[in-house]
Length: 102
Image (cartoon, rainbow, N blue to C red):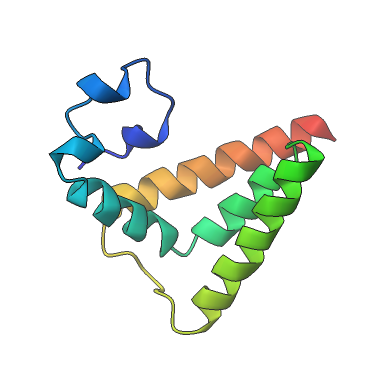
């Protein structure tokens, strides 16, 4: 399974084979797996560091909400090594970005 769908695509949504018109269940499942991943709240918090003020506030709210869900029985491991590797690399990239902003 590829998690490259999180990156910006040059493909218009109407020609994207994983678009909502095709049911979107795979996309919804992937979104849920990502949002329930242990690194997700950390990524949201890191994303807020370089964001414009309005977006940063929304990301910090989402970070707090995701952190609260994680504290209420969230997963410790995702069970998906590819997702684990992606999320870890994404967090590391965001940490480097935060350090560059400092």
